[in-house]
Length: 143
Image (cartoon, rainbow, N blue to C red):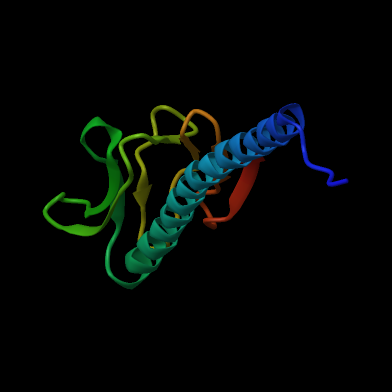
């Protein structure tokens, strides 16, 4: 006597496999957006370090947000030259702001500037940190 699977058993297996596939695909979709936030955060940290090195070797610089918050540039104080610049994807919300609202984001010849906060989010994943202006040290704030 041969034992075969009934239609109900086959359908039950298909439903279980479909549920597993749906959960794993949605999880993988979140990984990509989280990586985009991490990558942008790393690029912003790198920009700060490079701006401080440039200021120490050459001249004071200013950090300036791009139009509609689409990027961040490092300019000379007379705003004639763009030294460094990064852009981020339009689906990310990035905030770069001094801790004290009356401060400008200027890094002087010693590589010092005001304390400022950075936040990068895509709606699901958020990275936030503070940069100590005197040393450039980064303090993670979680997310």
